[in-house]
Length: 84
Length: 122
Image 1: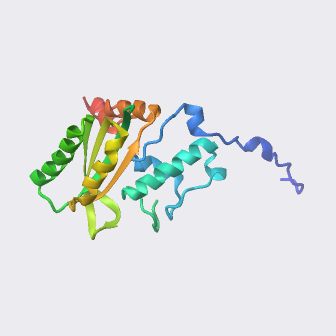
Image 2 (image 1 turned 90 degrees about the vertical axis):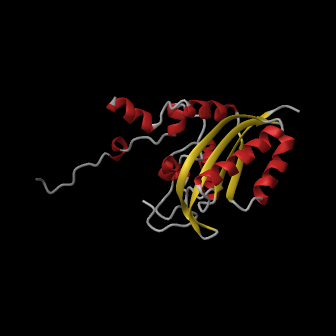
Image 3 (image 1 turned 30 degrees about the horizontal axis):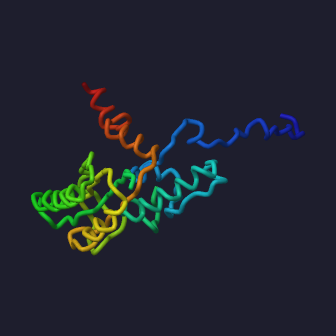
């Protein structure tokens, strides 16, 4: 092992973020499918931002609407502690 | 006026017996049919645990209707739901063409986990 630092190639390691809905051609998000919507929430039940999920603007908006509908129907909690 | 696709989910209170629950559900289906709505799907989502208590109840009986109707009847139908004290919550959503296609595929069980496991076991 040398004392010199090895060059870190960060750019190659990072995979590009993509919108999963655009990629797989999903057109509609079901508000009744609470298990699926859980992927876009953090442990407190808050909706994750676009910069973390990588969703496109169009689908992030739809996710937000679906989560809010699911909350109204008590499929998802408004506030939670240790949801996952 | 042009007909629109709608879906309505409502939660029936869990204190009712099975026959009373089906009766309550049938009542609303009749309401829709009387208003000349085309109820093409009626799905029982079963007794589920609520994510938070509503009216001090921790469970509820979910039911789903999909129908095609004139937009003018929705307000009256929702008023009926609101007046019924056996209904804890309801939500009516109008569906776009993607939603209609999605629901049809879901009803046919294209990606339901249950049918997959059944196929594997069979």
